Image (cartoon, rainbow, N blue to C red; front, side, top):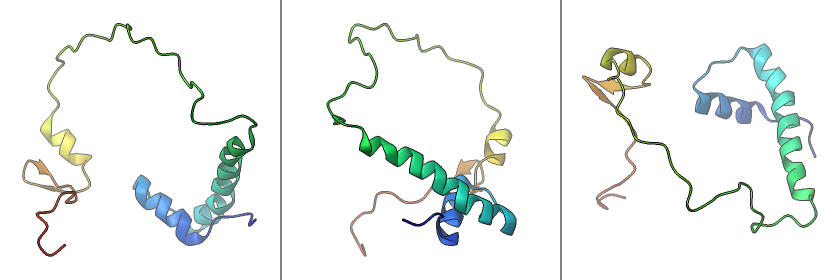
Length: 102
C-alpha cells in the first residue's frame, strides 16, 4: 500500500473543494490526505460491521422543527459565491438530457 496520494488525486480533491494549492501544499496533502483515508479505511476492519447497524437513533414520531421563512438573501452576495453565473442566474452542469446526441 502506498504512503501517499498521487499529485492528480490531490488536485482532483482541490478542484472539488474549489481551492487552489501551492506546490508545497500539494506535497503536504499527498501524505496528509492519505493518512486520513487510511484512518477511515479502518472501519472495514471492525468485526460485525454491516449495513444493518443503526447509526443514529431515530424515532418516527420525532417532532421536526417548524419551517419558518427568514430574511431574503442578497442576490449580489449569492452570485459572488457561485462559480459561474449568467445575469441573475447561477449556471449549473446539465444533469438531464433530452436523449438526443447522448
